[in-house]
Amino acid sequence: MKELLKEIKARKVETVRFSFADQHGILRSKSIAAAEVPAALKNGVGFPSSLLAKDTSCKTVFPVFTPGAGLGMPEFEGAADAVMTADPASFRVLPWAHKTGWLLCDLRFPNGKPVPFDTRAILKDALAKLARAGYGFLAGLEVEFHIFRIADPRLRPEDAGQPGSPPVVELLNTGYQLLSEARFDQLEPALEILRANLAALGLPLRSFECEFGPSQAEITLCAQEGIAAADTMLLFRSATKQALRRHGYHATFMCRPKLPNVMSSGWHLHQSLIKAGRNAFVAQKDFLSEAGKRYLAGLLEHGRASCAFATPTINGYKRYRPYSLAPERVTWGRDSRGAMLRVLGGPGDPATRIENRIGEPGANPYLYFASQIHAGLDGIERKLPLPPLSRTPYEEEKADLLPRSLAEALGYLQASTRLRGAMGSAFVDYYCRIKQAEVERFNLGGKDAADGTDSREVSEWEHREYFDLL
Image (cartoon, rainbow, N blue to C red):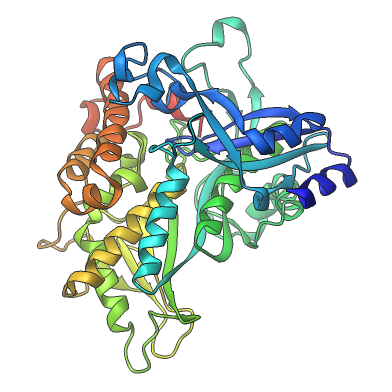
């Protein structure tokens, strides 16, 4: 803390944002004047605990003004304060904001008890369990998203609401030319703004790419261990939206916007385990070690239940389509972009890993990672056998179909004894209730698509709900 205060003074920081990831993976923060930062570091920064009781429209789902707040916890009654406690190692100076620092926080109640719905803490618990089994977690991020030029920000009073009207946008290119250098050059002015800001934050940038769809980009980030990779994803998304917005661009991590001709965006999570400083998935004579095969089997075993964390929006399920480079069934393959789980590497290759392709780019990284760790570790602990690989991932009749809706995914999560036991029944019930409230609002007001929640068409409700938020 002393070193942090010296750095704040040396870099002439005037305000510091104390931030935390809510249940949806959205950063919430308070800005503290530099003179008050020492007290904030010592005592924490209060915020209404009801923020943890809200759905994606910021509507409060639980009856917080009743005994126990509908959560069986008196600490939440009356929307009483919870406290952000800063992680000093997370400090950054935001390059796009005037003399502004940033700190990522964990959550406590004023009485010192940890907040049980702190998603960063849930990942820490998963990593601790993995460590007790002798492993560390390594994750590389491959994230698709859209960048548009804002034609109308829609900031008139009548555009406000819960949620408000999303901006009207224009394309930066017309797409459908994967990795086209000419199409990339049309994106480059926005990507250069982004590159400069992300580099100034110290994020481990690897590549910038022109994705298949109109105005669609992909960024990959180098692999990091444990909590660092999840923290990076959180800061990457928030920085992307903020830095580009100041230059007249709208970046969105919504999976499939309701715009003509656009493509779905995915988040492909590359993962492996570390043991004694080495990749535990590497085999000298096989494509995966025994631990890697067991871990892969666990991911398959719990694939449908983990969708609730990897794809936590109604919109994200519009991406699961056959022959679309997105998965449709619970399958695995060797370097197959149609399978849910793509195994990369081979005998003796230190970069051997498993790529999970079910995620949407707006997912909460702490919950996505935790679900993977608990699922894979179950495969190792129970020595689950690995099913045969699939060479026809969209035609595999014996393979389970992925959920067709958020409601279906929540049903699998609620029934999952493994994830319920590992993450806690109280948390699973809490999370499912929040997401079910989202589904209920959609069912009441969002069925402008042809056949409701199972439709492959994106509704106006989804565009309004997610396009600006994510």
